[in-house]
Image 1 (cartoon, one colour):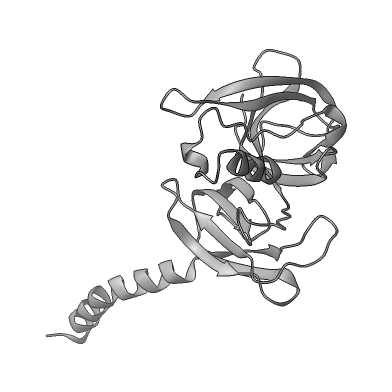
Image 2 (cartoon, helix red, strand yellow):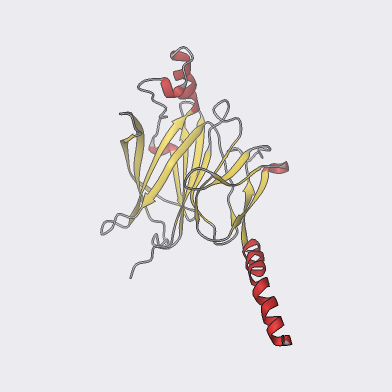
Length: 245
């Protein structure tokens, strides 16, 4: 066997190893700091990146100062990142939806006793240049009150359950790519959640801040404040690049 042929065989045998090594090296980092709405760090919060089947792709606990870091394979989009501590007893969850994994990304979760769930947004095509935003809010105070009024039943077993907090324009802040977006319309709607159950949700319309092209990658953050209970909540949504000709 010639040296050239022997070298070729060695390279062929090593190709899978190098491919695996390269795949392992292609990782990105999701990192940030978990805090409350006063900027106080929250240590020991669970932070997890979820697949579309709600399985954990990466998971950790926030450490000293509220800082966390998660390594993920590069490429694609994960369904969400969530963060919480003392869920359903003291706090509800923060969510960041449609998490891109093309490069390192900083996400700084803030959570309290409101949850801004199922956040979504889209551009109304051919209409006024704006964003339509949908979310379903939930209140920990209302959940506790419902459990107490039912004699201690599980939430899933309470009929006609209403966890929706008070949602008013003055209690909403919407940011698009870090810029505050003016609220144009706020409409209560209902969402069917199976077994004939309907829950309250909201549809917003906001003006696009100057310089924002919503057809390119866009970050939308909704912060909610219920003045009656003092509860707060927040969620973020990443819209992919959908540039049109």
